[in-house]
Image (tube, rainbow over all chains, first blue to last red; front, side, top):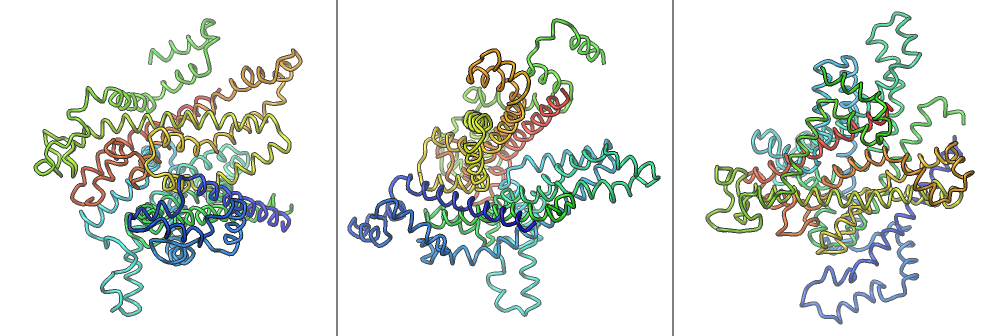
Length: 323
Length: 297
């Protein structure tokens, strides 16, 4: 077990290293350098740019630049964000908790909702309910994230103004609220972005879980349970669901990239101050170090997510535990 | 249903024996009503895209009256309204169908080429090369595709459509190549391959004539899903302002044009999005039907 964990950790480290190489290649294949892209400003003279290049080490030979890049990455340094005039690490560091909060709520919510929908469908397989729910989940699954988020914003903040329009807190009143008021204010602002991301992500879970449940139903132990005289409901809950939950753990790992991408659009459209919001705004300002920092952190999150899912799988499946 | 018996007879008839697996699959999915509807809807959208210059009521890039005709809600003259530059949104959605579908198909062709080649080489070669190629693939797979594309497109501003297609294609083959490798590994020691080797077939001939034909089914399914995926990605990138450049219309950048005033210009988000969902949904339905049809074989 411990050996297995160590192996996976080494693998994850290798993946992150390769990601670092890819991003470095990306940066250096791009035309120009950060200073020609960011400072398209005619008032900045070539001499100033040259000084900046020397300052940032862009005049050194490539191998040396690469060595510096890797060593600063290893120290957790991601470069300087031009648009925020702060280190990228700080910008992303202060945004990350908001993204993790949003993704965490949506992860738990979407798996609960998705598994529930799949259970309802399988309990009444072939019925109108089953077909209707399949149709709805296919519709949601086919929806481009950003379009669904725009529609949800339109529907619940403009047409039916139930929720606040954007941000993580009320910009004016938050400072004047008591502790209870502040918590309520935060929850009110979190609700719609989190629900939107939850619904978006649950479609894939429901489709996957329905298939997984239908896969185990023909198994011998299900027939045994049925012959023992258990009700259909007991069979589903105790026998089918438990075994069909194993692939769902793999699904948690696989859902990380989609969840992260979804969170990007949710954050942009609801002005939720997370990593996605920072990176998407950095596109507009051509703040390249911030964008690349986002790519690296995002990839690390995905790698850690699949690592976690693998470990959970090993813990949950008694057949793997002994090894 | 009389045609079902007819179909059954055709299935077992001796003349049908040499039908290609693809033809068989197509005939199988056509038996399901949902996939017939999906094929019809997709066909209409593709046709509208192909015939865009004939179907569209206005020039999609024309700005007839930037003061008097801008931001008009849907009406008889402009069924989908107009945008802040007074352009007709319906015409832009129609031309958008053309561009979005074209990008989807072309990028998927790029992905298929690279993915099949990578997977086949890795699976066929085995050993150290295979291990290295697979670890590299793991790394590619753990970079979220949208993030990677954002990184690339921000570094290369003002890209041509061709370059956009290449980048979309080059980031879409990872999953497929893993499937292809698995299939090649499974088939490598199959008896018909050994037989071909014993008959003196060259490596290339074995790859092309014996291995690849057996990979058609996962490739067709992956291609269908791939087109859907690229359409969504391109729309997302165009929505972020780094995809298809103005004044060209794609479903994503029409929504982007109205995104500053999304509450008042709701028609600019609603209609292109509906077309996008219809396209992606029909592609997903067809992919599912295809993989069912192949699995039953």
